[in-house]
Length: 312
Length: 241
Ligand SMILES: Nc1ncnc2c1ncn2[C@@H]1O[C@H](COP(=O)(O)OP(=O)(O)OP(=O)(O)O)[C@@H](O)[C@H]1O
Ligand SMILES: [Mg+2]
Image 1 (cartoon, chains in turn yellow, red):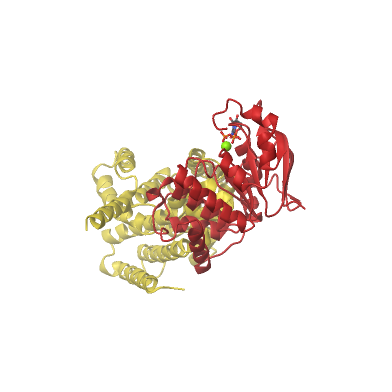
Image 2 (image 1 turned 60 degrees about the vertical axis):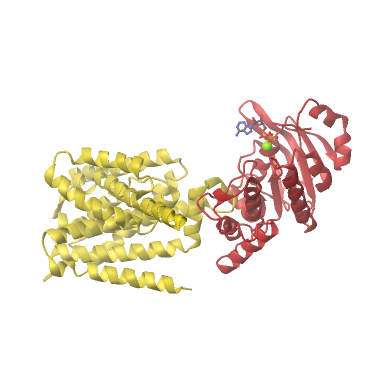
């Protein structure tokens, strides 16, 4: 059953996405490219938070799934429709996440972080090795969408993905699985003793960001034109996603978006002004967020609202 | 047939034998008091029953079916629910959500309005009517214990394991707590009651098993075991006796 607030929320979200979809009609240059970045990080950070928000597991595997997605497109775009490659990449990413989850989600948080970071590196090495065997260094992705520019098609694709992620997140939040994850995040021992199969719940939910990141990679591949492992599997991406999601707040569905927009804009300025210090500044941003805003902008807002409510 | 039986149960932690060739039977609708000095292995026994810890040796059966070796979530689904010696609540959730957690995932599973109604009924039962909207951080100590009890009751378990549920209560609260557990007993629930409060053991349990150093040293009615010379010796010098 849906309440009137549910219907209003869905309507507002649909209108917001509809308005965002008009961007390519306004600008095809700088702002569209910023729009692609924001849409990409919104999809990645929001799906990341679906799993990491309730469980508090920090996954640095985004680059692994993303890179695999770009290679799905890069390897098959000449024989298979681009539109079929997106769900195909999602399936591959989801399955890989399932396997990784089965292997690692029994581990404690620290081992999980290290493992996911290592995963991206491992997959990158495997693909580099496979390419060396065939004598290639990278792959060209030359896609043409007729009268539409590649950039605007990617942008609309990412908006569609964002809509799917928000809908999935909203449905999960109302499901037994979502409730189980919140209980697990609060106290795994209580969860187990209440009858929750914690391993299965975590693996199932970990497959969501895996599938979404792979689909995102598949969608973005044509933008890069030439993909090589160092680009597709850059660990920087994993860190950016974590920072943006935490900056916004991983505890709410819309939280990561609040971090993505300012961070992407700031990042544009930083990488234009200090191209050689980006990693350093990213590290500094990470420290600041963890120390100053442990619950992100959302936590800040909610605390402010609670204070205002308490005073009234 | 007994609903729960432990046979030759042993648990070792490295060189320490916390539970040593121990066992007992619990009949349906029975309140079994499990007592013994500090460190005698009572909580460890509950941990073995609930699946929190694996057995080193022996067997535990629920309704004739072995449950030792199963993970805690399977044991909980089969109908064994427990509280913890140190209360464990879900800190990010309201009182009502804490109890709904038990109703949604316990032995008997419910969802939506049905789970909510069950949780509200359990809050009424433990004396927390109207407090469902509170955060768990706002509760008094006895109320946190009530929430935990309501959570385990919400799944309609067949066997209830209460690990020192009455510990830490002041004298007035203790009377309230004893009345609450007596009400559960009068409903015909099957309960294993680990307690140091001898008044509670005397007035609530049908049978009593006494542990010392992981082994059973006496079993019988509360009156019988509390007069047993070995039990008096085990407790001698123990402040809790
Ligand atoms: N996880 C563990 N690892 C190692 N030793 C443990 C563990 N759990 C319990 N023990 C040891 O096993 C023995 C029995 O402990 P247990 O907690 O079962 O006692 P208890 O009867 O519940 O005591 P109390 O009345 O103080 O709660 C103690 O010596 C304790 O130190
Ligand atoms: Mg104990």
